[in-house]
Length: 540
Image (tube, rainbow, N blue to C red; front, top):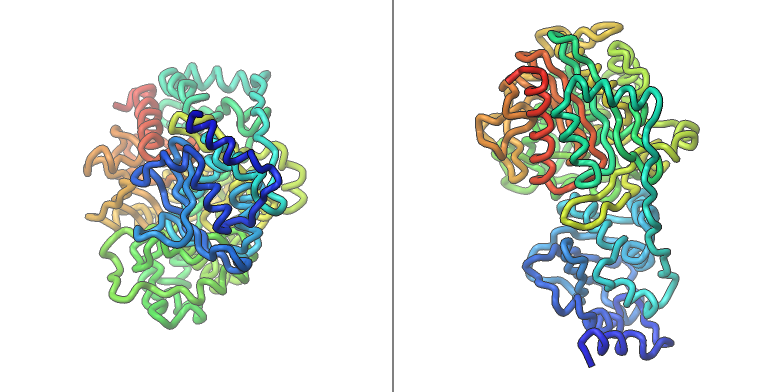
């Protein structure tokens, strides 16, 4: 009998035998799967699941080795000597949902506050695709042998989006006429690294202004110019401008500790963390210790409680390395805005940034009513790359994560609005309907403040809340384009969104690709696209 046949007999021969999740018998069944035995630990990420309420007779800690390329899973009772890539603390029932639940239920685990997470959160997105698609069949073999409600429907076929017509098709044709190479490259990415895209480019000297949507924003729904993709960390630039406005009003000083404005953020070394460190991502708190991992979309009071317990590692020196803070830093900055101005962060940005820039379609957060009206049309993020099929996910697309403020992350709006914001910065702070900053403040925010540091993702020079072009440090550190001036400033959004303004070229580009792929492939595609913009406009 073949190995696969033996495994099938072992798995299905006693159909009535069902075992508690993570019991010794369950772990033995998991170990017998051919894909588990063939898995190479050197090629796998390590996910440690620490159960907060392990039933008698089950392990309270299980390490899952996951090969993101093949879909193979191996379950080990206990910890492993190597440091886990991601470590989760969660209840036994939530662990079953994490492994066997559908994509939306898995995302909702991160919204009720009962799950703690440390490590590199980015891998959770790609693990989500593995668990949903189960290409190696590991979960399918275990589902019927696990006690409890662990059934989940097979992933439904992904319907294509209908072709855009009318004004949308006209906009795509106009963009193609103005930027032929750019649009050809963008179309080449559709179906390869991304299901859909939204592009905005403005160049005052040539009079070029294009806005277009292509492909699908979610299964069966076309990406249009009016679609509202999530900006991810491009959202941080609006918060940086808010701090700049308060700096102009002499209400904050970037060199001062956060605790000067938020007295509750003190003790255990927290009182030494400055606004400048947050804006330049040079605090002593590594990304893997972000206290909001796992609770980023929970109610605000739970997140503030975690921040009150944040402790910088002993002996860590601020400014010695890049410690990118995807969530906790902007949560603090938003609280500083509220503390010194009195308005909520959402209202402040709406009144002081969106309105002067004419960004009428952007939402800092959606109201519950807006979410319910637009949920069926909101762009989703698909996990792509690695030769596996694209998988739509529900990360930051549920009602909780769209209607609860997640500062620096969950602003939604068309790329044309994000472009308007950067046009105001390019115009030295003058928006379409009012001024947002003084020229000298724009210069201060977009100067190279963090220099001489590079991280594994190619992040290098940084302003106060803005990523600076750093191609002088090599291809790995190219932020936007090999043709961009070193005065170019902007931001990226977790391997999906990108925006920049080049003062020397008078160029603004905003791009959203709703296929999230790995860093190397994402950088390759965005640099190629932005290089094409420069060539199309004759700016090389």
